[in-house]
Image 1 (spheres, rainbow, N blue to C red):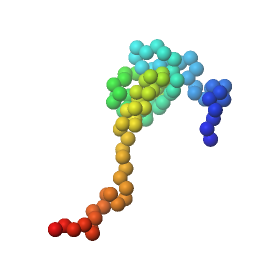
Image 2 (cartoon, helix red, strand yellow):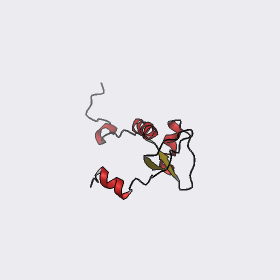
Image 3 (tube, rainbow, N blue to C red):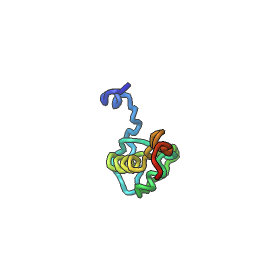
Image 4 (cartoon, helix red, strand yellow):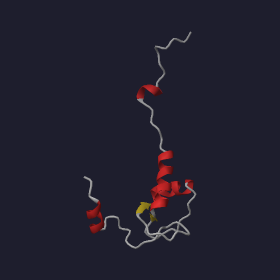
Length: 94
């Protein structure tokens, strides 16, 4: 179920109230928080250095989140279908 933006802001589901972006030399207000365990590799690929927090969360502003999200989409593993992995026994080999 998708929650409207107004309700999210009232409930504080974003949980980034007043926290600054974790990227070094960025003083913007954070919009998203992501798991350090899951996104550490993507932060390295995006060449972003961040301040490690005790809560094991990375807080990102809108700009830095979009950079990390682009890296995530670029590095997704493309799955092949079942038949694409198999050799075709009916293909003429001569």
